[in-house]
Image 1: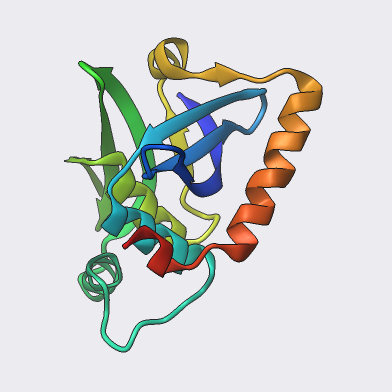
Image 2: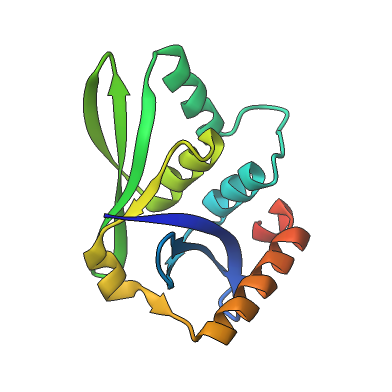
Length: 159
């Protein structure tokens, strides 16, 4: 498994389909994953530290985990099959660890809410099949453009 960092969420033009973009911590490959609008909104809210009047589903899940003494140890994007990404949550309670299947977007939305202590990992096979490698100069331009986009995007853009 390869540790990644969340670059952010953007809308792919012309399809207006949100994608989450992950990058290897110790490498140059990127992994774009198409996600739904509600999940994109949930991730953007967490990245921007926005609070809603009522808890969103992912906020509720984090609260329930905390109340029941469950720790999210890590999030792993484990497979890609027929264009669908698969992920797992690794949860720990009372010293016992359990893995639960999840959509990558939901898993990432949870990890973002819990901060840097929850690593996001991607299986090498997934990177081999869907990873993207940008040229060095293009890479930095793309990241800067993406960060500028994140500074201006609002959750309503995903509605």
